[in-house]
Image 1: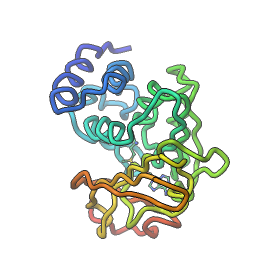
Image 2: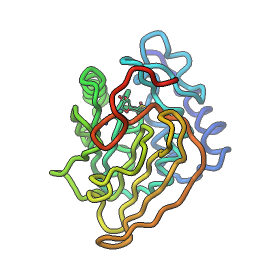
Image 3: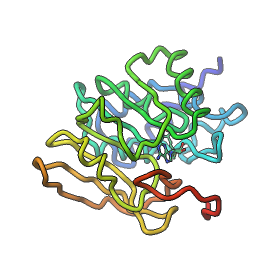
Image 4: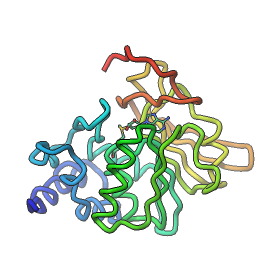
Length: 222
Ligand code: SAM
């Protein structure tokens, strides 16, 4: 297999660390997870450029900096149970799995979910559970979660996800009135029925499609 560890370390130094992500656990995890194993065949040489790349089913593997930024926003701790909505390639779940106790990740496209499952198995990442389905409904059997990260843009914070946060839990989610343009929000469950909200700036994610997301349509502007 191609050894891209030098490129990986350079990417972490230049695009993650120098841009302000200083959490040692995040930097360590990103030096460990081979992003080239999560891109489509033929795209390996671009794995350490700091940008999104196309994957199957018209979806994307997120930009590494955004992955690091969202993980930092979520304030992950080693013992945490984390839910990710939007497995995609599996890269972000893999990075989180190196930091926390257990990662649950949901993907609506069965083919992407299966490919991610196979990647985790091959890399020996045994603390990630993958499910195919509508992640806007969360994963009730595994709740409550210390953190929930949503990797697709929603019209609002799904109620099911807010309810599946533990008290003190953090929901990181891109929200916007347009399917492809959002603000990155951090919603913290401060009490049984109280939540605080903080805005971390503009982002562009593929749409979150589901019961508590956008309706399925084929004419989203990409
Ligand atoms: N975290 C991914 C990675 O590291 O490769 C990137 C995710 S990609 C930007 C967003 C993903 O969210 C897509 O794979 C898309 O199919 C998925 N998605 C959209 N709506 C969803 C839903 N309701 N439930 C689960 N997955 C959803």
